Image (cartoon, rainbow, N blue to C red):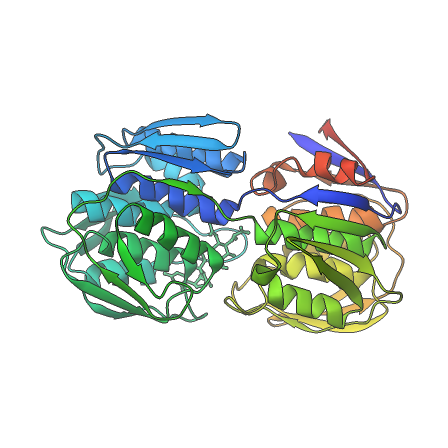
Length: 420
Ligand code: EPZ
């Protein structure tokens, strides 16, 4: 297993190019199961999660080739039954259920377990499939869905924490080949849902309203192959924006879309971070002393839960009190105890973390627990005095393409080493 050794205290300078979005690529790759024709997906990040999805598609019978950011996939003949172990390992693979049900009218997929950030049930996904007319049972750790016919319907998909991203994606993909019209209310509005709808429409689907809480899908009889460029990764872009601010640096972010970051940009600006747009790029720098800000995570276009940990790292080096409230996942504060090892002062009260910022951080061995928590530890390590050792960086490799190389290009003193 790899670890990162980070010598902090260097202001990051230069420009970084953002990769394609992991969370857009995963459902789009699953959507290639909806047709027997070849699909070409470009700007796919080379991440372990993406490779996993490729293996899962192959385990269903599809042909998948991945070379330098482009995936060619063809699901000429597929089976409805996915590989238990492979699917159980990656939650994101739950989004193969909609395409299998849509195309084959049946799907058998292992129930994705919870993860460190929360229980993560899929009741809303199953509610959607049942509303389309599928019979859904859970047996032997598998979800079995069967539907001689899929009929369009009106469906409210809101849950305890509001909308569901992959739940919306799954229902859209099943409804794309259903008979009649499906209207999803309280749908997720994330840019990744819009990107999926654009790809499906390129395949011949008829989807309107993606990006709004009401999405309408007019079912069609068959979908064809298509080509698509995946949107840039807004969470990676936000992570590099925080990296510039936490190191008192100046970084130009290329290939990202600032319009996908409005909630993040707004809070960073309130904290005293300068964000200047120049054409398709934007430059992030520090305009003097940072100010503490309160953060509450919400579904898009609210502040993304996937940037909560990174923002907490920034507030650790910001003098004053800030309150960070996690409203999406019930246990997404695994990074708190590890940030405390670096000298941060954080207490947890229910869904909120109270950060007493401004203590100088000092390097120490810390343990990554999940993807975004590990990003926060890397950011804190870049700001800390001395050396920080971040262990289990396989978590970060799941969602950030070559992050250590990109940081080194900006002047960071970070190296990848084998854990002993
Ligand atoms: C997607 O997960 C992302 N993953 C997550 O990113 C992201 O944190 C999340 O959306 C929220 O933005 C991918 O796209 C692969 P949800 P998803 O369904 O779709 C509850 C990362 O770091 N819920 O929108 O699985 C659920 O428990 C990852 O890249 C139900 O109760 O998240 C959560 O509290 C982590 N029942 C809330 O809704 C359901 O059936 C939002 O979850 C479904 C969800």
